[in-house]
Image (cartoon, rainbow, N blue to C red; front, side):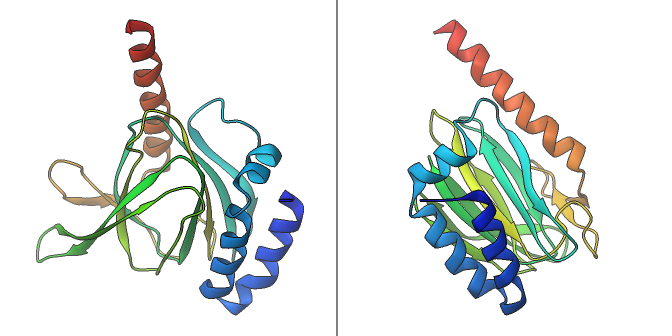
Length: 185
């Protein structure tokens, strides 16, 4: 059965070994999706909830609102994504001379895991009509990275500095839109 404190300790032990070791820990955790949900709780709101944070490791519980989309962005550190409820679609991007262009995609369902290298640019979509829950583990301090992160405008694909407050507001706005659509149905 998934235990949050045990998971944190396993990640702390694995981070020195690198991304592959973290991937194994995350894969084992999300293979018990019901246990993760039981331990972390049924999602009540979309958002970013830190589970653990240090200079070399951040663990976050992401809850994506139904049909929510997050602009292309980078992390400047490796990350491992594990889905324990719903679905997360990732579009991977590569830099061009002036902007970025789509270079691939990966859809993750319950139990799915993806490992992203430090230089990956990706955007995220929850394509379904219910909350999607994911554990994201980062090889650094997600909230205070050593190198500044970037985000790219959805429409123009122009690079700009990452703004965590903007990202948090996107989660709130997506949840508000979804709740308003439920009331109209």
